[in-house]
Amino acid sequence: MLNAVLVYFNVFLLAQSGAIYRRWLPNTDFGNSQNWNAGRAPCGNDIVIIGEDSPIVYVQTNTTMKELVLPTTGELILGREVSLGFTSEKPDESDCPDFDGDVEFSATEPASWMDKDSWCDTTTERGACNTAWRLDVENVPCKYDDVIFPRDHGYFVDISDMVAGMAVKSLKITGSSMSTQTFATFLNETEGKLMFRSGTSSPSLTITRKQCDDKGGCACGNDQPEISKKICDHVKKNCDRPRCRKSVMPVGMCCRYCGAYFNITKGYGFDLELFKSTLSKEFLDNQKDVNNIIAVMTGDWVQLVLSDTTGENSKKLAASIRDDLNKDLADGGHKYAIKGFQLFMETIAPDVSSQPSTSSLSGGSIAAIVICIIILLIIVGVVLVVFVYRRTG
Ligand SMILES: *[C@@H]1O[C@H](CO)[C@@H](O)[C@H](O)[C@H]1NC(C)=O
Ligand SMILES: *[C@@H]1O[C@H](CO)[C@@H](O)[C@H](O)[C@H]1NC(C)=O
Ligand SMILES: *[C@@H]1O[C@H](CO)[C@@H](O)[C@H](O)[C@H]1NC(C)=O
Image (cartoon, rainbow, N blue to C red; front, top):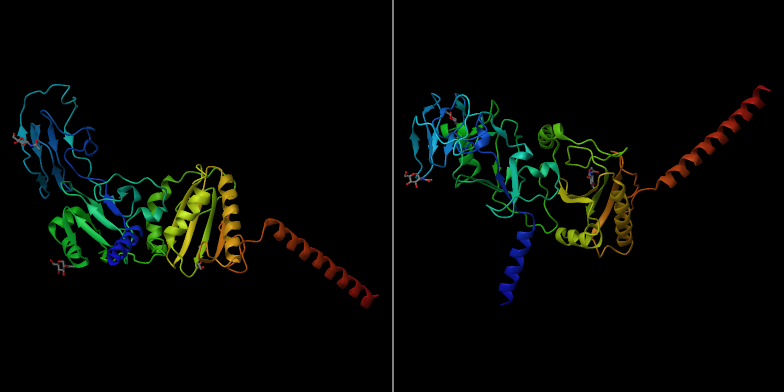
């Protein structure tokens, strides 16, 4: 009985430590209205053109047309029990809105693996997409994620800007589970080449089959500079201008934000879920207009990001959290199990901290130091002048 409880408890812990599904969103389906120049899928007596360089087109539903022009090399996959009908009869306007001209397949450019808009993160394979605020780099599959390309769709994926050394926990493409080796082979085969465009580079993706079993949490891995740069190339085009005079750029984010972030060093016995729930209960849940992210970063430190439109509420909240972390550090760290932290506000440079276990000097004390130095310089100057005056006089 006790064993069963322990096993259950362990499974529960593992399930909690961040494994999520990453589902690929864009498709090259025949029935997807976004994939056609007409803004709707072919119907009625359309003349349908699937041009050269088109990806694999997947047909899921019965459809009719007058004529179908296919590329010399390409692939049209008919789903189960799907048939294409050919007719020259003019259709009902209500079933098939009129379109002047040939209906052409327009999804001829692949979507990028490194583009966060290509992915949806879910807690179950087919579940709805989560909309929680995350680090930009964590919106692309992480080292501990299960990546899914669901069955019964066509895909066209650009992996040419993927960075060597990227890894995921598992990869399932239309029902087949891939290993590092079978995926590399697949990319080299006709079918794989039509689905994944790799350009001249031959990117490699490591499939680890390893889950995170550290209760302190595991780093996603995408915050490494080379990877994060590629991800940010996609995100940066759409950055909103921050509505504050001084903004911050948390690690793993591609845009500047109004607010603050912490760099927290884990202490002995640090528990990520406990840390999250304690902070949520005492601080984050009460501040509905402040968005927050808590993420484990490469190098095994923990980042807490706080942001709101003007940054004012985030900074107030950051100050309260800073005080509570300091209090806990002084009391022996039983509440948060951290070793130290730094708080960054308003600028790229940290709000100076001499020891890791104490937080920043306040603006007031910095001013005091500056004044002391100025006074000291004046005294030295006066002494020098007097000295020189004596020697020459
Ligand atoms: C397509 O039509 C055939 C017969 O015309 C039918 O048996 C089949 O169920 C249809 N398929 C779909 C996906 O509706
Ligand atoms: C890809 O195919 C070519 C020739 O078909 C072969 O020489 C090469 O070793 C293959 N590469 C991989 C990674 O399978
Ligand atoms: C955060 O702190 C760790 C050590 O505590 C350090 O290695 C890392 O560079 C810091 N990162 C930033 C962005 O301050």
